Length: 328
Image 1 (cartoon, rainbow, N blue to C red):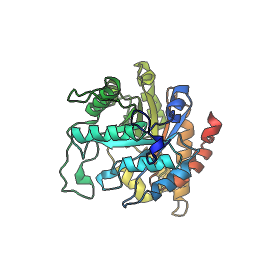
Image 2 (cartoon, rainbow, N blue to C red):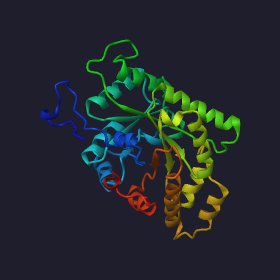
Image 3 (cartoon, rainbow, N blue to C red):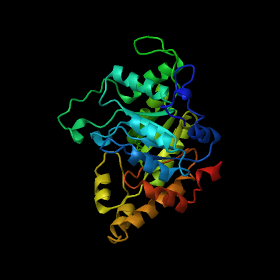
Image 4 (cartoon, helix red, strand yellow):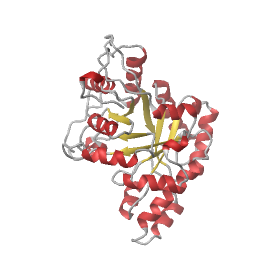
């Protein structure tokens, strides 16, 4: 991806042209896609993002750049996206509704398009009470589904929420997130998750990355329900996975709403020694990826290992997934 900074890279439209998206090409070809996640640093430097992206280059189709994750101040997702692109990895810029009103959200979207960021993942965002500025005023002028509709109209109809015409219009691949039901056979629980997902797809989501999946069979059951409804043919779904690297991380994940850790997984990791815990968590992650690769209708996996990105290539290799170039 070419990035802003050189006058001769700007097109006649005034946008910095992004090359064809390898992430989109992978999804369109039906090849099992892999995305990962990078959290920008708490500091005024692009180097940490660039170094993490370089470690993932050749192993992932794209990398999410988080937007003040956990409601804590970080380098912006737009700046991080440019750093990842310069390091040779296609970015997916996360954008949350928490900190901005509709004016700022539309401005941020336009800025991303003008700078050549091709993919945007839209989220409502965690409440500030959970972050490092608990007394900050939340905005939440729009939620994720509303902003998806706005972004879709900006791209396809060339208009802002105000009705103002965009010249030139942006071009994005739009994504969202969803939490799979822990009990897909429970009509109420599965129905609620499916309705949320359908709303986001109707609003314009072209790909979905899910919350952590630790129960492959339950997730496969839900995917079967989505396939029966035709949703897997309307949107590419990537299952969220990640290595549990410490007992503290295991306890933290268990407190996250929507994350279901089966008893067998908790017992397996709980039985690991302190010295072997990280290796066992990474082995479990690789096994989950390998099992998910056989789930009908699943487009790929999204690997969340913030702080442990360097381990992702080995996890993918252990799961039997070759480098990106070898999957073409």
